[in-house]
Length: 104
Picture 1: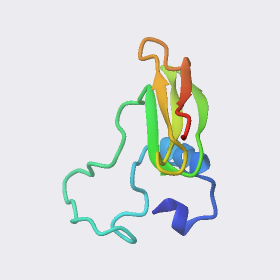
Picture 2: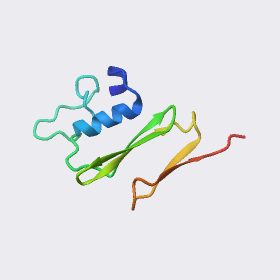
Picture 3: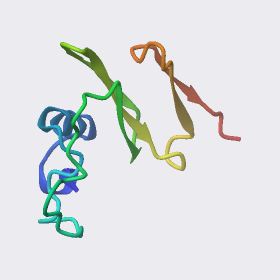
Picture 4: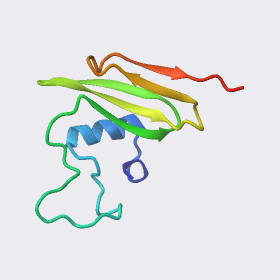
């Protein structure tokens, strides 16, 4: 919902979520979620190695360095718009590739 509320590209929105350490920064204001009193399940406690979002028009990625290594931010394209998958080497998240399928 961040894309709808702010004029950001998908990768920029994913980066903002990582910087804010929150997966749903507009909830519950613009996303229907139940209220949480004790803890917020959308808060990112530990910096992830990979943070991705799907259903986008095109593939995009960016590596974010941090003191604990870093995070690979990935926007995965909607398969029906761009028939491709993103492969990430979990031993080295900087190593990723887009595998495209030819349409016939």
